[in-house]
Image (cartoon, rainbow over all chains, first blue to last red):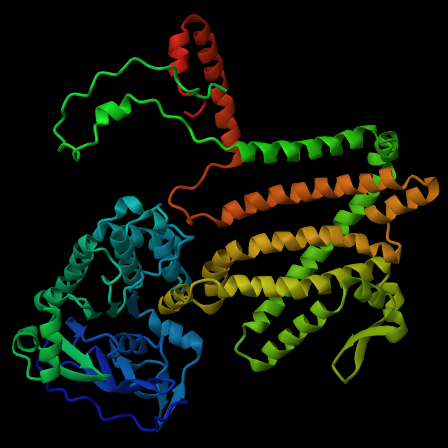
Length: 275
Length: 349
């Protein structure tokens, strides 16, 4: 289905924002287009995320933020454009001047390097917290059970839920479930973590505990892309804030610029509404 | 049965001391209301309807006991007769084969209907369409007469050489035809039930499994199917019970299952009603056993679905037994101190 026949030119290497200055960005997004029927959701999105940096994507609903995130780990097939993580094309293999579409098995392997945290957690309700965490390392990476278990318990400790290993997801609060979901994504030791509105389904008093876990990850140098409506979180944690509207990136830069001195009228209008 | 009867006009209780909570609105005197006697609402028509239903039921039971036509002596004679017990074995055998073949093939057909291949989807749809359309009894007779259509049955390369051949009559006797008919019929219904269970699993579950890179087979086995089982089981249990009773249709092929055997006996003795009752009671007993099994299987697949899992019936029974001596103690106490016993709330711990 792809119309790509030539690889796009390599991204400019002189970007200086973020921690991975100089090196090739961890996530590179080029010319993404995606339509659902006649609705064009992404209309040419370009994005670079340096290794170890936190990118927060803001924008009104329907602006294509979630679709962008889902396109990055190939949950959503693209109409045009491509995505590379750590230099590896996602969903395609390049051979000479051709791109071969990868089989599902290979896409699944690529996804083990990309952690994804859903708005609705999507924990497996029939498995305990511990089973939720060890499932992918054992099934996808072939880790020995004992090793996966030890790693999972360490991760639960890290998100403050060591005592919930034997609980079932429905026995936990929303905030606890989302922390388990984050630990589950981390269990694969991904190169990059994608968060799709991780606090939107939570009661207001539970938002803080989830954001604290994400902030902790940010400090530890995990590469992250976070779609959220939490402007305060963006200001505090983001290296780069990306503002999207109508399927394109309207404006991007350090939070101090985009949030406090936006150059674009659409950005200003959006911030005036949410702040 | 120490249900609390309306208390005799109790002495007015002392008004509660004014607490720290804010006083309620004017005109509502909590202390005065607490001292009033509460009269429960009465439902005379509910009682009348219940009584009428009971009279009809008693009439029926009385008929069962007194009408000589039921002939309970003959019923007792044949209820555990060897021929009947053997026939039950045959009924169970047909049910088991039909269930295994039906659900195994049904799972394959359901997988084909959910497949990404349009060819497989269409074939599976056509299978369900055809086998749901043909009445079971017509199908059974058809399979029974298969040897008219195909005399020999062989394995080999399609449109090429054949490696081994069998006489159709030899392979597909009456029992084989019955199992094949029951299984193929059952598979069409099982396929739809399994497919229904699978598509009812929230799409986010498969998406989360895909995002974690879990291989496709494992996604189905470990993530989707266990959750689909909750939707599949009640309908599947219906199907197994239908099949158990549906095996009685097989009497047309002169296979010695329960209903056929009952017919053979009443054909010989002329005692139709008691032998129909023998078959009926056995069908009820077998269905009951299956229903109990269903309860426990459903309970297993419901794990994680509730915050606090409910106690099972055995556990409830044990709790009840343990609570019994406590109650007798309470009754013993009632003799010595009536006033205490009246205040003890009945039953519920």
